[in-house]
Image (tube, one colour):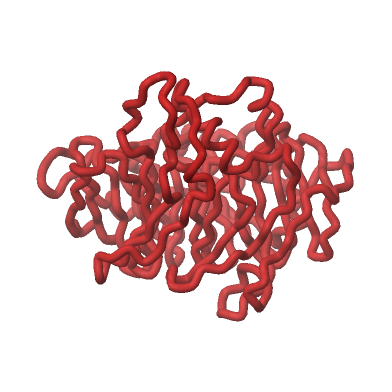
Length: 393
């Protein structure tokens, strides 16, 4: 089985952010072979100071939260689902940001495709299910405009930083491949960065296996090159599960390696990934190939990671690494949520980190299971989801 690692780590940058590598541009090397196993469970207090909860207004009801993403900007809460729902820091509903429809200023959002957020210019960009375009709306719901993708149906806009658009192509021919065809489904570059002021490409990350060809059997998944982007305060972090480096930047004028993960030949690299992506790999080989699929830098608490069998690992600042058992992280900070499924929250990237706080959504019924004690007096099992707010150490 592919080994999914969820990594988050941090030291101090010489800019004003507390997140990142050391004060120089020398990357931190993380040796995943130096681990000690323990049968105990990891406790939340190992990397968090306190936990609190924000109840969202009952109207409107948001429905299933499996595909919902939370964005927090200056403490304002945005729930990204079929629409983008705006709330005060206290959970009071403000408005939906757009009208659903096929009109010139309307859009039908793909529920499974999160909006791309531009924090500096304060707008969201939404993939339109009704047309071959993306439409953008301000944080206050003002319609800004659209970008046509008629000539590139498979363009995926991921995020913005420093008023630059970060995007990738899921494939050059929209998946219209023939069985037996030799191909490289990723293409020459992993992603591109376009300066919205000059309309020029400011940066692109080369595919280190651009010359590798695989035999197309089936496309394993739709989501393009599988780049992962996480914005924390002023820094954008990015990594691919088949590349051993976690990079960071403020503006894509300078890009630094923050962490390099030391692995062995059993881990996925880009050449293996080119074959995996189109099914050109045996089942046994796929099941026994490991992958670092996510990397999330937090405050100065070392390295926390999740294995595919549910086990949890943590690396301290001195490099000592422990692997815990398969039980979820124990919430020892209060009695409201004894256990939290962090693996799926982080794996799906349904979270936000701002100003030293981690935010994510929990279904209301979770507070009525087992030994949980409901923290909010008006909460019911069928209430809107609750925003969990964790102060990180």
